[in-house]
Length: 149
Image 1 (cartoon, rainbow, N blue to C red):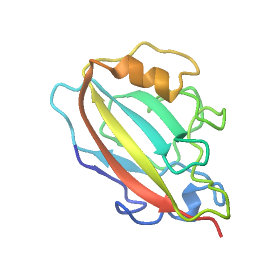
Image 2 (image 1 turned 45 degrees about the vertical axis):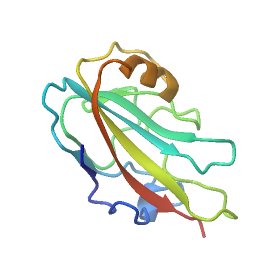
Image 3 (image 1 turned 180 degrees about the vertical axis):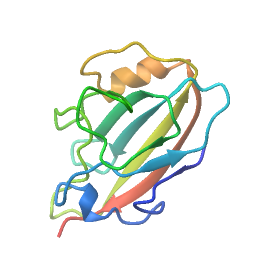
Image 4 (image 1 turned 180 degrees about the horizontal axis):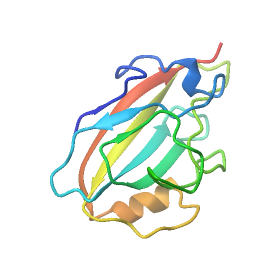
């Protein structure tokens, strides 16, 4: 499944607007429609974080093949159900690596799911992945990098 963003190309740097140094908006994402998918889920991961993979966004029960820029940081919106990221917040929090680090990679994973998932408040990425297990039809990603000045 192909995943793209109008904000950055795969393997390019993520503009500051989408990070903790800017407006911290979620970037626009779009992906291929998958036959038999009833919903989609997005998990954004930083595998380069000092303590292991750090989660920046968890959103599921998305019923279209795109998300606009700046999805509101609320549990339930017109775009889907948002879980808790590793900052402890609901919704998207963008790249914010330690200033001394070389660029981190941020994977915007999109999962095509054959069902609508039960709503669970404050779901985290691990729980969402376990809910998707057995229902995942396809998966894709776009990866962006970020280094703080």
